[in-house]
Length: 237
Image 1 (cartoon, rainbow, N blue to C red):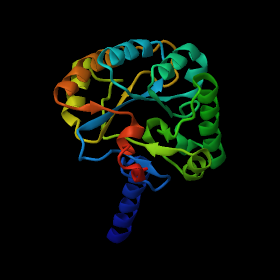
Image 2: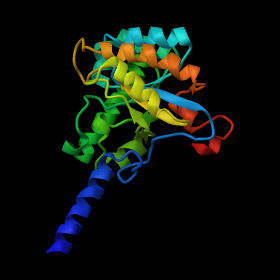
Image 3: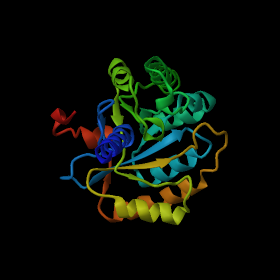
Image 4: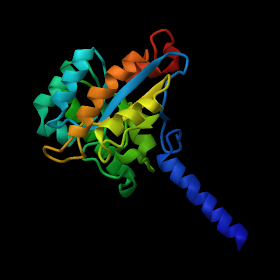
């Protein structure tokens, strides 16, 4: 009995890690950090664009900091002008699915449709074709490997996440700065899933605080592509 229970518990723990573990590539190729040899980090945003995205773009422009925005197709279509502004500012664009579902509730065909529709919306309204995909809620599932391969996508998790949807701005900023490290990928949210006019003021204020703090610590901000695939070592891709 003990052995059976232990085996079941171990199996459940492995499945949980495979689905959402930041270093897991069980369901599809995925990265979660860059080289520790360079004092560089990637600032990433999920769930946008939203009505709060322009405020974040202004802060990034003021400090000349690039970021990677993982956008949802539905939000791109709803706020096409903001989506275009984000791409025009030179930030990297990633795929965050079309309608932000939990992928474990989808069939392999449904997962392929979610990623494919997002690629189409992003290409149509933003003029780019993402090479990176971040799963909604960080949850991967069966069928994702094939979908990513067909669409030329690689998964991206994170080194640190700010919990900016539930914590105060000063806590989001302090915990994100505290967890920053060479090669780190930092995850914040410029939207709140598919909500219209979401209250993302915490994220805006957190970004206003953390960007200068990280710059003062000597970090260079890079896009995910530059962080994972630095120009001096293209084989890292």
